[in-house]
Length: 207
Image (cartoon, rainbow, N blue to C red):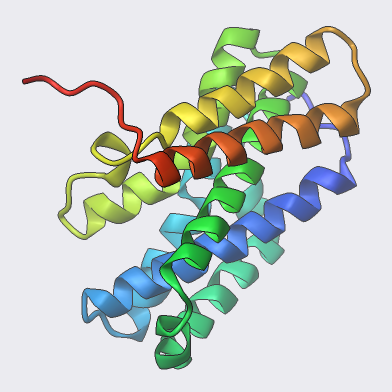
């Protein structure tokens, strides 16, 4: 099995994205009146679902989220934060939560695309893997809550993840410096997501 390269930058952003999405999962669990166990399960699925799906598809078995105990610990810490400090978290302005969500989406999208390239996946599929990493966990969360996944009906979300992943794949294939490419990809995803929320952009829908 091909071993991924050590990349401290992506490990850090992966952990940060995991914590942000775990808090989102914990908040969704509280809104759905789930108990503590339900909050832990939902937070784990939200934070790590996309990465697990990506790893299975590219052959990184067992998934890094399972091999590295720190991912699960961070996910459960995020769930506990949302559960035990729910009243405090609820006071955080919606705009701040959208900003954090966009940041987590950006981090996961670029991390997913780069990891797929490290496993010698075709660039086009690597872009898709970046998108799946970014939106997969939220999709699993919504399905567990018996909801139509947000990614299928609201704002420019998956499109932003794909754009950020595409920027990373293009930059790395052009052999540009890794760190600036990763930062640029994250910025592309983040800005596209935030502008779409600000201007209420949506993809065309069937009439």
